[in-house]
Amino acid sequence: MRTIRDFTTVIALFFAVIAPAVAQERLKVVTTFTVIADMAANVAGDRADVVSITKPGAEIHGYQPTPQDLVRASDADLILWNGLNLELWFEQFITNLGDIPAVTISEGITTVAIADGAYEGKPNPHAWIGPEAALVYVDNIVAALSKYDPENAAAYAANGEAYKARIAETIAPQRERIASIPEGERWLVTCEGAFSYLARDLGLRELYLWPMNTDAVGTPQQVRRVIDAVRENEIPVVFCESTVNTAPARQVARETGARYGGELYVDSLSETGGPVPTYLDLLRVTATTVADGLAAK
Image 1 (cartoon, rainbow, N blue to C red):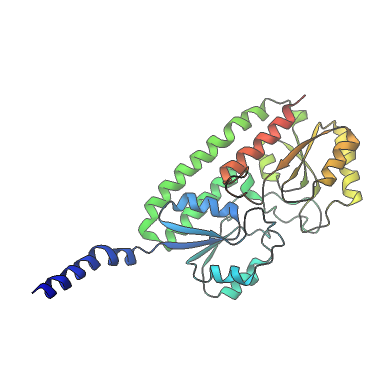
Image 2: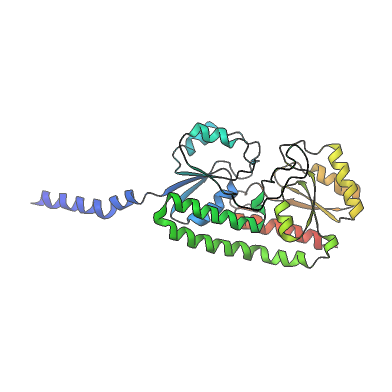
């Protein structure tokens, strides 16, 4: 009788504990870079696991996936990528993985065209840096997770709405600060033209050394063109992004008398404990650096 009772207890434990855990196995979501991973993690909450292919601080345009990347992504239920010619390596990567669904989360945004260079006329891919486009990203992530994990759709929707509210709250103070600066002084000068969407949303005119990190970068012609424009428009401050060589921007500052305002973050988050471990930090730090630079006298 004791053996039967013990067996009955084991069966009961299985259906009470083990079986539900198996049935509730969480969705595995793989993203192409850290910014999307953090966005997706905020939407997922505790209902899905999110992994980024690229590591914090990586330059994503020309990234070269490793065999380990393929292994980590091989059991994904869903892959999220930016599209818009950002991850030039991704189509071959997903082909090597086989039959895993992939969703482009920039779908539906109002794009800004690249003004020059090899990608002239094509959409600027760095849409997430614009807080308005970021809301579209979140909606697309909610839709993707809900499609492949419909049982948790309500949780994803609620998390997405809460996250969008936090994005709006994060950018609001710097939006107000920049709006108070005279319109003729609202210039955003950077190395890569990666901040077009932020400039559009904050009412800034944009000037950059090179349009995309996949083009030629920091050429004498690019530097001379920006030096002339900074002088002509009496622009007081120039910036560069964190993942590239800042020397050309610093040269512009030296030769024009403009201040070098520091590094902006766009393509990648930092490690935990770094300056921008989350997307909200990236948005806040970048917008604050720009506002501080423009407001300084």
